[in-house]
Image 1 (spheres, one colour):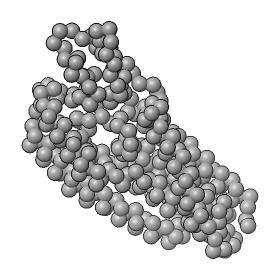
Image 2 (cartoon, one colour):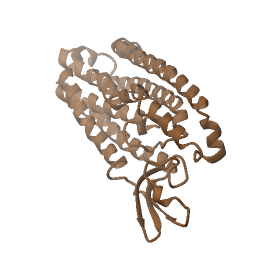
Image 3 (spheres, one colour):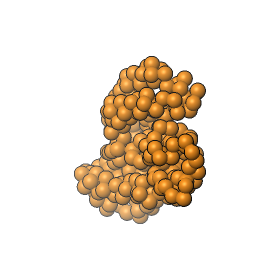
Image 4 (cartoon, helix red, strand yellow):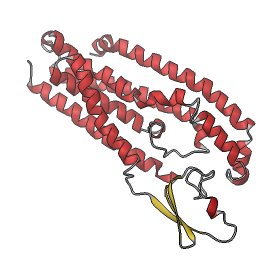
Length: 300
């Protein structure tokens, strides 16, 4: 089964390795440039001296260049990479066998069909986990200077790039594609159906991390004494009005001689990552479990 699995999925393995090499090359080139600029701008010394309060202009310029500018070259592909790659790997796993009729040979050998599927799922899933962890490690290294001056809780694809959510999203897309291939019995139909299905939990995750904010944002009240600078406080100030780099400020209200700040604490990153990953993995396990259950009972 190991040899058969390799023969059937080696092109996808090579494609995954090629994607990983491209991501690594771009991340290393841009990341090395980013680190040189980070040191040249004197930001490490400023962070050590005042937590960024003495160099807001330098930090803002650095973030604008590498987070909102050239960094898009690395960040933008992460929007669709987990879904597309997981679906391309998953849809043919059963869909190709059923579409071409080769299941009659594959499932009539000494290896029972359920064991055939479970073995293939185990090997392919292991490869996807390695791929997802490698991409996450590359992005974590790439963004290390930016993570010192920005928040990991920014909405969008960047939130999932440095934790288990990216790998979990990849497995979710894979599971949905395997099930779609079994039900549709056509690879192209399975690709389209699985991508549409994957967009549903992806949208839910974006809503939870964005407009809905689950868990609810924290609130901080800051007294506005003489010379406190409350009048100049704003959502995107550097460092944040909470006084802690890494917090993501959502809104500021002035009233009663104080600022009422709504924000996401930096410490909440792993809580949100686990919530998102749990949602993706629950869907992946359900889809793959359903595929195994159906295959055990259906032959044609």
